[in-house]
Length: 624
Image (tube, rainbow, N blue to C red; front, side, top):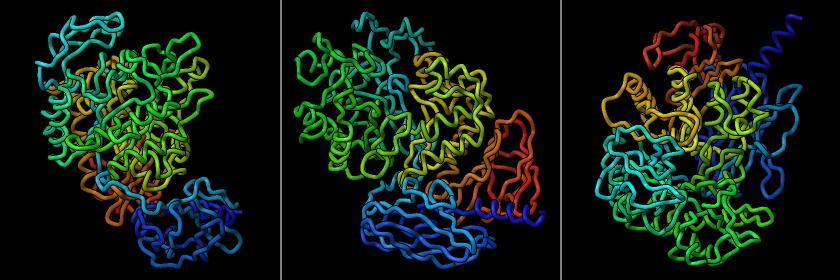
């Protein structure tokens, strides 16, 4: 009986140690050319009962097995490696681990004892062009009207115009508290502009930012500018086309990248196409324009119009092409409401249009970065030929927010579902994350834009129920998840705001002396960004979840050079956790304190590390 339990425990431990991915540590060239032969590796505990390892693929519809051979035993882990010829542009593969009396089948979704389908196979993309700059990148999202005023002469003035029954309003001082949304009506301005962003490039560089994503800048009457009036010109109150040219030049001179935001699903009701009566829109039977989510001021574009396709992306001087060219040469596009784009009841064109749009963009710039706004499961767009990433709410943002105790961004919209006071567990986090990442190629996983705040959702730190330690956990997770961290402007200085309306997510950036809380926020982000920049484990390394139980997570990032551990607890009492460091070839922490100076109370025991975690504790430390 006791012997049987020990056998079961060992089997469970061995299976949990099995690991491979598509990073350079396990694939000799993560972005191979077609017909190139690469080396693919897998590892597990050295005393595992595995006799042979086969890699199964199905090139041209025919089953192929490549046998891996034991290549090394290092730090208690055994590595098997096989030569693998890439004969298709999309090559799926899975591992078959052969033991005496069982075969274990290993995919990105984990291990089974039955032959799995191909949904979660490992995936290599031949001839895929991954922009070099994404390695180690740090995104910073800017809502331009509220970031910095670089030219007061182009400011909107109080009473300058009336839009949707509201007159424009100019705040007397940058430090003024925003009007309530029913008074501001999205035509209340502080004067933020593109020259203001340009002036703050030294600040962004000092923070460690490498790429900025800017909310819409094209001509529109509102503060948010998702109600575009003219795609071909930058709003004059942001400085016009010349200001964008100056900004792009300065960004590129500082070795940074710039991504612009656009909605090609709908325009504003004051767009000149409406006044010109262009046949570019959906109309109802009564002749009125069909609005996005029935908002009458946001008429939906109808891509059954060939002329519209030419204007937006297909033509030589199309909108999406223009801004990718000199003198601007922006580095990519973020597409607003990409999840609903070209999907209108009986007129379903999204599957036809996205390949054409993405191809047109990459025809102008093969390294252009494409971000689609989709808050849900969007794996079909993340297979290599379409988006580089969504706004990764599904695989990160929604998950970490709910783990902190906040309502899920979808469930809270439904009164019945929102009424259930369920507390997300660490097991939920692991399962939900796996569902996203296990469907996509590794090179796409490394591009995921991981955010937890934005112009559309309340800032985590503005919730009264969220402590600094909990917010710290969200930031740490942002750097341990596969992908690129994206900071929403002001999060790094504990910007003020409220949580019940989007006007509360768009306060003016505080440029004066920082509060005590702001200093703590800034110090945390600077340390995590430095860690990402200095250690390849974070920029292009592997990621393994070592523990997910109750309300505690243990994450790891590792490369051949170093291994880092993050412990994140939402438990309200001190807990002891056993971290299986043997799974990452380690035995103990390096030093007696973590990356933030926190004392590490623990001891090495039987391949693991028993660690006492304080209530709502958040730790980062290197192990050896």
